[in-house]
Length: 247
Image (cartoon, rainbow, N blue to C red; front, side):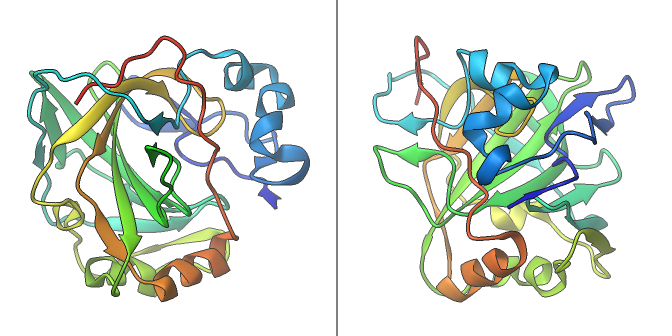
């Protein structure tokens, strides 16, 4: 299965900090001709998907201890739009009220979305689902916070999104405000590495922070997501090459 529209992660950042999709005419997806192993050959601007040396996701196996700065999210109840873009369910923000501070830098939360099963792995373990919180700073540098989900009871915090997720490509505005902070664990310890977008054009230079503490999702919730998006929307893990994962 592959669709016509690009996920909002496959973007460039404009001078205003907004995300602009790249190449709406290129078809890509997760199976068949447009599957991940083919992305690099689908369009010239997708070449980094195959030629890049710092690609995401990764399998976090070996790490080094480091003095990582604390993550300080400043998320608040906000108006959001839930989007089915043909590749995932994504929650978009229209303003810059939600921010993340780390290491003296401030990033604005642009959107978050989901992958089933997880894209990143921990020592070979794949998880039923992963959420990516995508941020950009004033210069357009991207930082992604990953939250992994284990099998468990129904996750009530996800319910407002799951209730309204469009079954076809399209969007719906949540009637109530939504606080992304509700989706983060209380302990924000994390693994950090330099990586890329996990969708075309696979641009590198993305700061990745995968949280070490997990959330949970029920099998029913995962199945509902798959009924809308497909059996899977995850890119396979990529070679770590010379990169170091710090914790």
